[in-house]
Length: 204
Image (tube, rainbow, N blue to C red; front, side):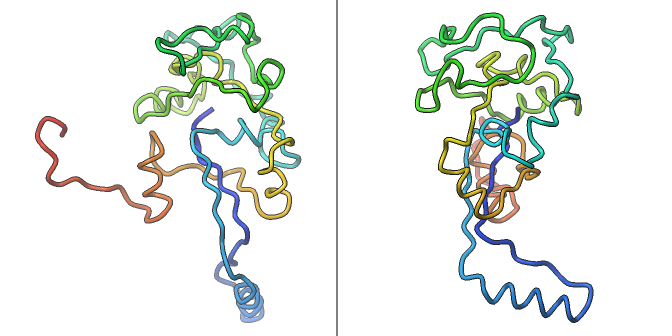
């Protein structure tokens, strides 16, 4: 599960129309829009919070997903013990069993949404290793939180679900750049990558 950015918008602006009548309708819609609000949730995959949202392209379509494999390509018999990366040093999170099935699982069974869990790695190269050429089967292998990366919540208890029901939920929105939040902040606003032209040689 990638750290893809979840976006909920308060209104959708209609695009270019194919006919004058449709163009007029689109103009009428735009005239009624005062604001577009984007809720940009960091460090969460779509499925982590909205995977069970009715009608969304989420966990209900995960039956065909490949099983997770280790870095050598061997299928995990069970998921590795989730790691609590908030501890120093990181340690096994004993709230979770050490033998979870190799599949998505509900975090709520072991840790309610109000309880802290480890943060998942979301960096440039690790994300590409996790995608594994489109096989999407090494999220666990390249996560610093081990099996936790396959966890999700029953998001129906969260306030963001009410917003998604009332407005628009983008279940196929993906961030534009590999890696963490800062770079994707730029891509959300300007569709560009910041350039540090005067960067010292040791960081180039």
